[in-house]
Amino acid sequence: MSRPQMKLTADLNRCIGAGQCVLIEPDVFEQEPTDGTVRLRRDRLPAASSEAVRQAVQLCPVKALRLKE
Ligand code: SF4
Image 1 (cartoon, protein in one colour):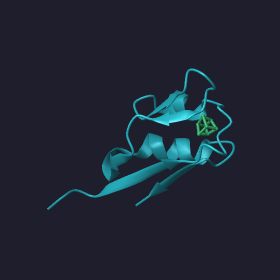
Image 2 (cartoon, rainbow, N blue to C red):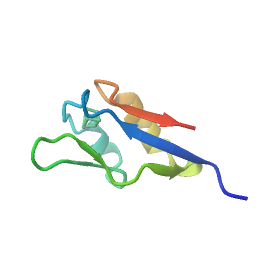
Image 3 (cartoon, rainbow, N blue to C red):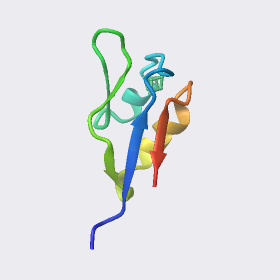
Image 4 (cartoon, rainbow, N blue to C red):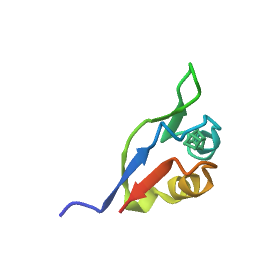
């Protein structure tokens, strides 16, 4: 049986390139070199390894990140 996974999305219309998410979890988030908007290094995450990602989602100042169980 497959392990539970979560799906991560980023709304680039909201992202202001604050970089908070990159500071919290650089394995998952990175910033576009041109305008600083977020880029996802991956969008499917094992549920068990997602604490830092949850924190990044919560702390994004414009709520651009979503995590679906
Ligand atoms: S914390 Fe939010 S606004 Fe800042 S780069 Fe990440 S997604 Fe964009």
